[in-house]
Image 1 (cartoon, helix red, strand yellow):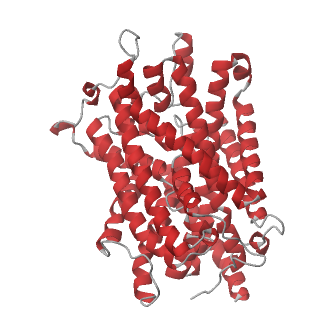
Image 2 (cartoon, one colour):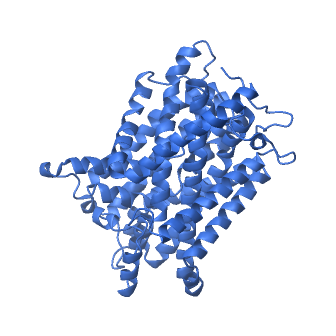
Image 3 (cartoon, one colour):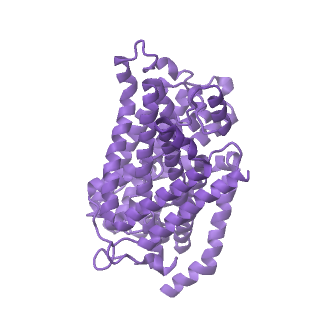
Length: 501
């Protein structure tokens, strides 16, 4: 078993993240764009409130099952790199390398690109509301350039120091938790002013249709349910993000399980409440029509009516009118900004760990002498995410990518394919460590073992099978990229790792 680990003293990383910051990382990197934008994808695939609610409940149950098992693994091996360490120690060096390969090139860089893209989209919306002339000047490629600038600015903050980025994460997380609590309460508060105002309040009648009739229970609906689960998984994605910075968490054996489980439970509760609030104001058909589509946008503008491409925007418009649109756009921007910061905080620790271990260029394992952060790793990740933003934009302009899908959904579907595979393997590594490290100290032990981690694998398996039927371009590209990573490991990574040892 490898014993590679970076020091928390001397020239290495420092333990600067307390329990509040650690919990904020979990909550802040999960709550980003998904809860505001993915409900329409869920409604599109399962246009029944009961099934849509089952999707969000099922996603929440899946995350809680995973967190119960994953907390034991993270507390057992609290090292920089997170899943890279767990997969390397549990399945072998090639598995660790492939996780790093997919995490860097697809999962987290794709997540950064998708989040920054949505941030810019909502920024343009705010400009159109407050300064229409400026908003109209922010065209297609100007938006992509602004997206790149946002990524690079946040990278600079994270290079400056973990206390800076951790403190920023805590503040933004408090703001977005508050905004979701406001959304949850808004349909009920609306009763105070809705009479005669032309706006909406909570109405249980909008929860219909709740369930499909027997003749509507088809294989296509089952596939739609699995696609909806994939969309919900993007919204829940990031609950494992505390593990990569475990080496910078104070008292990790105690604080990692507490922060992971507490943060995950808060996210699940907020998501269920927000989706209920959305459904009490908007019907499933209304949510289904809220997607980013240039043709729909142009048609709406020609008719002099608004086109909402985010459920949160449409929800706030119906309850608060035009003011609600600006409020929702600001909330989405804040939430996405926090998630962006969180991903740029945790992911470079993977490159740092791989550089130290010899599975990536050694320079990535260097620590900035003044700021004590993996500065080069942060910069490399940010630059690659910027290239993804520009690359997807160019391929979309050339009609190479799937028609009818906006940049955000293209990027998130690519990101989720690799994430579902390797993050499931990381959770299931608990079985391996119980066998290979039976006497290791375990300050936290998984409740319900072995049933809880075994149940975790059911929904990811269903999602992966369905992707090969309904998101074939993303699935096949993901398989090809993993295969390419295996080839790179045999040609490069294995030799470097052997020399390192």
